[in-house]
Image (cartoon, rainbow, N blue to C red; front, side):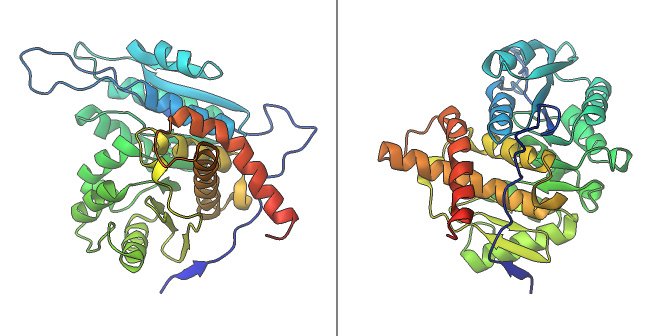
Length: 320
């Protein structure tokens, strides 16, 4: 049975002598330009906000620099939402689908200058996305960044790349909600119920981490993190306010930010756990301030992250 972690390390030290170049750089690859073909049933929604929200989570969690790689037609819109970020456009074809070769070029450029890469927020679906995900998680990029965070549509693409998914080739953190986890488990012929009780979820999370050789963050009312050897369960309490679109994108950015800053002395498992703790604490702070369990705008969640990190740091100082 895997070991249950009951305490987490401190958040990364924030040196007063530091500058934006010393606190890590996070790259976000996501967004979808959509597909508007009137006589084609495969019409895809345009998704602009997801990579921007991930970038917000990253910068609010303390990284020094953020870059967004997104399809060219939507990149300027994403940067309008997150003006602190820089952007690299990915070329698209006549159907607004990304060109995989240019996507690979952008990923390579981002990995060359970043400490962590978040792949998937709002990325869309299709063969071109599957090719980009497989290329990004291939052994060619091993050691280029401290860690990859695989989220949202990249997880769905991974569930369709079953042969590839049996051996993820780079150090990464996967952040599935129960539905995404179920698709991965089914594709890999692994039993388990990611939507069950705590024990069922723990076993499913650990089994998925074991098969993929990755850290898995199984989201839910009691989010679980496992590397198959260790498991940590968030004890912040149920956060119904977080059950809204966009909050998961913020989480992916927070985890990427802490990885970039070397949280947990570079241990991806501990970095992911700290990211979840910061995220749920931010949700609890918002709920307490508003006296509500719904109505959360994910941008407001991102705004709560610095206060949540301060609260967590104070809990160590006072021995909580």
